[in-house]
Length: 185
Image (cartoon, rainbow, N blue to C red; front, side, top):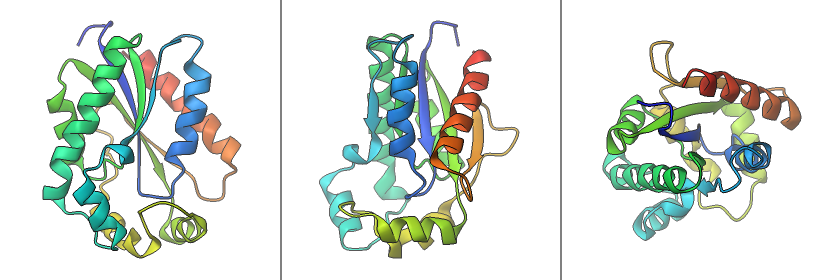
């Protein structure tokens, strides 16, 4: 990987962790150094059949996710390559094999996974308050069943705990951890 490789910041974690809100903030934070940078909502890249399935309260399985993960990876990598070298995307990236697939799909890009993690109770409370999204609170259990937080040996990953923190505290911690991750590039 060269220093000029496309860089993709993946805001990962279960539904309800605040990935989209943090992504918007990161875009504003990094736009001075990367004026053409894009923030992509990974959920918008789901196939109609995946959205239909989730809208009816049926969790996705691995087979449902493969093409979506490839699409997210390619879209974020292409955005980074054409827009100044950095992009931000939301993608749950729950399992290690999902993160590996994303890296393998676009080997000329460097992926940085920032996991927003909250306990089930916190996430359930957040999801109950959220409106207009196909991910419903009753599907949360399946996401926690699939969740494999990155371990210390997984490259370019970090975890930001969100429980009992204000949005500003979470946002500041994410920005600090991303600075550390990007400085290693």
